[in-house]
Amino acid sequence: MIRFSIPRVVLAVLGSFLAICFWPAESYSDLLSGTAEEAGLRVATEARERQKGFGNFTASLTMTLRNKQGQETQRSLRLKVIEVQEDGDRTLFVFDHPRDVKGTAFLVHAHKTGPDKQWLYLPALKRVKGISASKQSGSFMGSEFSYEDMGAVEVGKFIHRFIREEPCGDLKCLVLERIPKSQDSGYSRQVVWLDREELRTIQVHYFDRRDEHLKTMVVEGYAKYLDRFWRSSTITMTNLLTGKSTVLLWSDYKFGTDLDAKDFTKTALKRIR
Image (cartoon, rainbow, N blue to C red; front, side, top):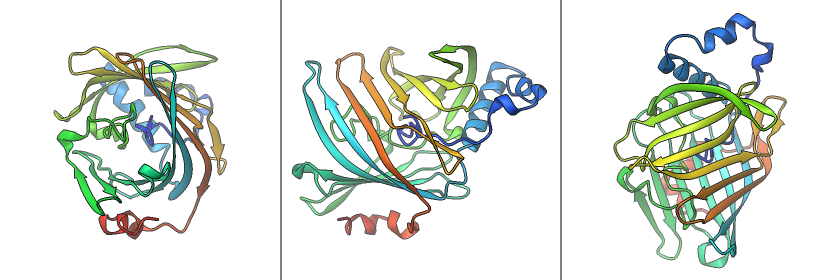
């Protein structure tokens, strides 16, 4: 996702380095103290803080689109991310396969508050198209992820509320509700499961504007990089209304590359190969 990214795809690809189990008991108690809104904001802020400091990274990505009958279509992408101090991160997706989408690129300038800026480069038209905030609830390249999902999950964009603790598989999870502040969001709310020890996104339920459970995102296969940053290998988004799903398989993570801010501009999109 899921910063989740990620995805919230990038959103769901989380980083972490301090385990709650090593916190003093009073610190963990403090994390969940106060009202549901105070505890929710504190947990969300702590989860976001743990993602900071990676600098930049690249990764490879296979996107599998699966229809209700189980038929699949695959696409190959590259991902580049650079961290921005005092603002949201910059993220660039580049499609390499199949031929009909090769060279298509999607750039996100995330912000801590307010809508992200997003652009799509269409090589057949040699044109950069801006994705306005009101259009970001639309499908991203025919997948079950929306353009909105591909942006960053910044704490200031949501109202957070702690709901409960509960088991989630072999883990124990903190369950939060986050309500988008933007009126352009395609969601009325999201319910998020974070594992209590590392505050990694495990699952997100997305509710549409009629408050119907629309989609579920599951994040799996976490591994730690540089002995500090957690990254997932598999993110699955399932649309409960259509029965369609999209699976993102992440691989070949590389940190500390030679990326810089000039690689994440509208002008750079036209030079993508």
